[in-house]
Image (cartoon, rainbow, N blue to C red; front, side, top):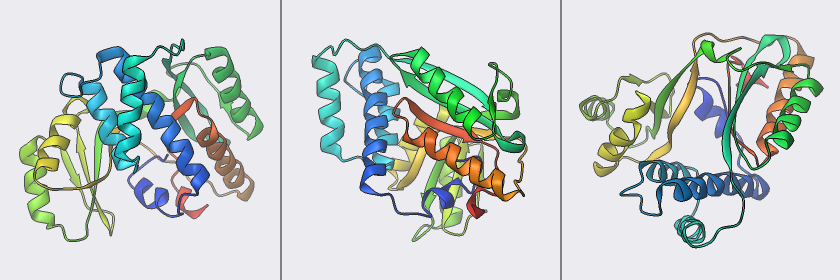
Amino acid sequence: MSGHNKWSTIKRKKEKTDGAKAKVFTKMGREIAVAVKQGGPDPANNSKLKDCIAKAKAANVPNDNIERIIKKAAGADDGKEYEAIVYEGYGPSGIAVIVETLTDNRNRTAGDIRHYFDKYGGNMGQSGCVSFMFTRQGVLVVEAEDVDEDKLMEDALEAGASDFLTDEEDVYVIRTEPNDLGAVRDDLDAKGYKFISAEVEYIPSTYTRLENEEDIKNMTKMLEMFEDNDDIQDVWHNWENEDEA
């Protein structure tokens, strides 16, 4: 959950607790199950499922868990129908926030999200109120250790990447058009590259710094509440100095 290239450092700043890992597994499981129900259990014929599996593996979800989720989703109807809904709003001092959800109860989810915004000094807005400040791009993050930068950049651009960023000390960030993410990922995976993350993200065009300690505290708590909610898959924002929280 982050807003810009430093997200990888922020994400890895703190070791995930067992509880946090369980939350990640739950969210990934829901995403995989929805993809199976929509397009079938074979990733070779279901590009959405293939993307979800790659995302889950990057999040360190064990293969056994992934296979079990696919089999369960393919063979049983739990009676729940999930829909993807995107909410937008503002955090403290006008931080732009986009919340992606998968929910079987939109009233519950909308109420929770509105509550988190209100409680921590923000407000939930109408659809489109902040999304114009972001562009959707495929983002692949590769560990820099033992990777030749020039070779990776060459391979990435040949595979169809649109940009290659090196502003992190320990990772390389590759950007693609959203629809090209899967093809670029598969091409680089076949060449042996390992990904910390590979997904379509909302990239902000501008960033906002928080200087007030109370704002920083509230924004941090808001993000924690979002992360703790099983209905919420991802949160994107333009908070510039999150890593200083």
